[in-house]
Amino acid sequence: MNQGILRISFLTLFVFAGLISATTISVAKEATDTTDGSDLSIGKVVGKSNKAKEISIEQENGETVMMSFDDITGGLEYAVKGCNAVVTYEMIEGKPHAIDIQQKLAELPKGVTSIEIPDLQGLMKRKEKIFLIDSRPASRFAESHLPGAISIPSGDMVRLLPKLPPDKNSPLIFYCDGVTCNMSSKSAGQAAKAGYTNVKILFAGIRGWIKAGYPTYATNDEIFSGNIVLIDLRSTEKAEKARIPRSINMPSATFTDSFDLIPMKAPVVLYSDSDAESLAALTLLRENDYKRVALIEGNFEGWLQIGGSLQKGPVETKPRWTRKLEEGEVSRADFEAALKDPNKALILDVRGPEETAKGKFPQAHLVPLNLLCQDKQDPLCHIQEINSQQKIYIHCSTGARAEMAYKELKKRGLNVFFLVAVVTCEKGGCSVQD
Image 1 (cartoon, rainbow, N blue to C red):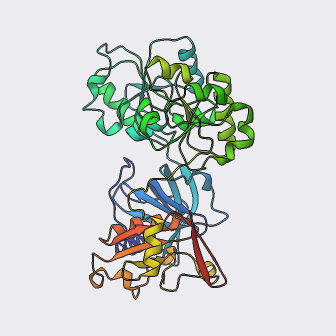
Image 2: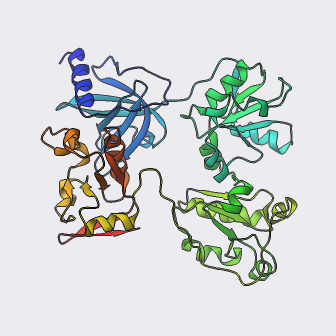
Image 3: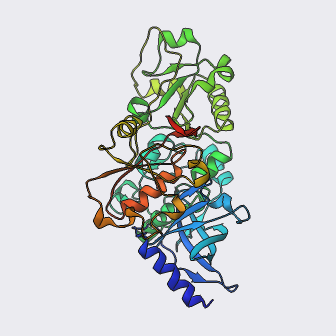
């Protein structure tokens, strides 16, 4: 088939499907041809479902492309939510199918050079004067950042330029998430345009820093009031005499046997009076797939030095944590209330036929993610026939596909929410677990 025809089919499919969104990608303006007859899609990965074998790519021109993939699709390890990617695809039965996925590396702005982790480590060990800038959103900086870094989010860089040192020869080092993140490139470029002459980017970012085994740190405000699990690794005797408020006492001596009590999805902050103990606990959690772990700079002594408040008396030993809902999420309580009273919300199940054959919620509407809005007879595709105030609660088996469906239907003006929970179905029925 002619490539021009392929592109027309591609655009027609996704304009009809309503897959339009704003973008943060500063790369290709449209899908581009390759020499082998396939096409390229360049953008940010906004969702991936291994069960549905679907990946959603947000492009610069405002289109969100939902593609299928299979077990022989190359580079699936690069299909990471929030990362930029270059996807080679072909049209199969009117829908794009990913053939190969590669990282879309951030670019080096004019007047800026790069720095590697060992070199940054050397500067830190020699205690050389550097200005390390975290270009990620402030909330992510608060949860976990490199030692000594300051927060200047990329979107606020121009406004916050006065936070940089007045000496334009000062060494500035910018970082964000990793090699595909372009927030640090944007910020570093703006610093260079402002006249700074010694500007570098740590392209490896915080992901590379963590992968290399180095610690990250939480801000004092996050320790004081953030939605975290704060762990005191010192002995119970020390914790009873004086500890940081809200901390859970899990002594280092028994931490290996007790750490699995910590909720896997919780942001965890550790402290002790020994760097070795804190680092050992941090390494243990990371090795056991805890993704959000940080330390307190200076440990317990560091907290005392900044005048942090203290608590004494009997300690708590069991971590408790409630995840805050993200934008668009429905709580388990509200979802289950809608199961009991269908007037509260329409339930949309985006799992596949093999899963729904094992069981479904009786009142749920079944529309597999890969068919969402492709069937013209699907009532969800006729926006004018749905009251814009009608709540729609979307679920799958864990939440990944539900979130992808939410993002697509939200663009169509629907009053949608998605459930992040484990939905287990057997013998015709289903249950919900956090």
